[in-house]
Length: 156
Image 1 (cartoon, one colour):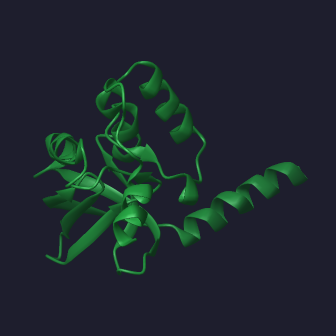
Image 2 (spheres, rainbow, N blue to C red):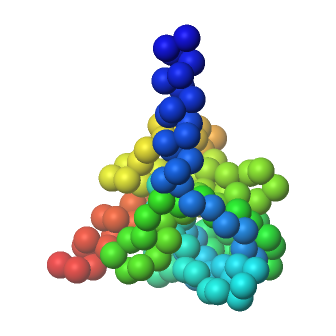
């Protein structure tokens, strides 16, 4: 009985902190950032949580953006989030027809599991499978450098 009460309290506490809303994708800025308008016409910039797609100027950057566009541009999505980043973007999980879009980006080889901010290990497993199957950016003999390393090198 104590176990059931504990599980229920965990579920309740996790839903209290998580916020979600339905929106319409009006822009895909790159492979991990979108713009969404909600039913009240409020515009939000969403950074897909737990993933990092190639930068636009990086190999596969444009392909990652196009893949994400094909998945959700001008479509209704559900955004689940708990916080914003330092640029005031919502850090969110994006869902379309019950599919985790963040995960689809990794599964198809258009993004890395962002290990620094990773909460769910299945993102790493999906990346390893995409690498093994040589999908997307993993198809090359020399895959692109991880975006966080690319940004660090550009700052130097």
